[in-house]
Length: 270
Image (cartoon, rainbow, N blue to C red; front, side, top):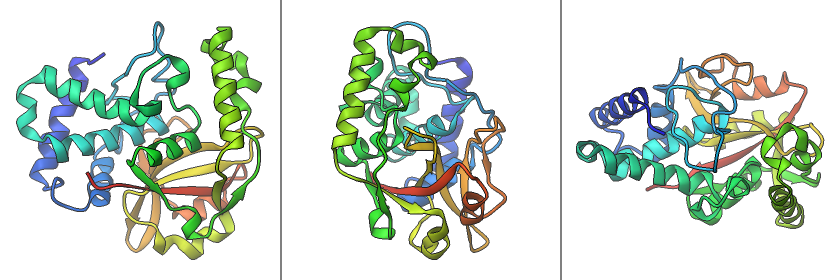
């Protein structure tokens, strides 16, 4: 799944990150700076919805909000664990990066069909926390429990071609049942964000909780501090290229009627 363009971007990012010393700074700073290097990258929805069997897809030249987060985290891990020296063997380097993507994109790091991908972002956060990749800090920042059930995918099965397969549909139903019966989800309400921003660090994952029935999260990106204010670095759902939102995070969320708060997670040091 590697194009020549993706391999070129990958080499350039790793080489640049090493030159900038991003293998030695705190991981949140490395994530923020690597993420910022993607500003201007075109948006493309559904980059993981390829025909055929489920597989790890690599696309560094087009990103949506989730693949932006996954790409930057996996790339940061490669920079800090493998580095420029690993680029000499392209096959091994590509396999290593794909492995990092697989670890964060799929349940238990295993590709076992469509349902093994972490489609709901609260599930993505919980699984990555269970695997030791991130720490969910929403509750400690004053989050409240979100009691609403998660049912969106099965309730809109016609929007997901993979769910035309009855076995896959049942497997997604089981995921939803497990999420609805599992540990509570915490969300920091939008009117509380302004009071807790100083507990959020560069490179923290920000997930916007949505008011859409049956859905947990509608958007995600990274926290980044600019000129003393906290902003969201993300691939906008409007289809615009990756950007740092002009408005501070708290102001931005307040202005979006369909988003009622945020979840926050911190990537662990590698």
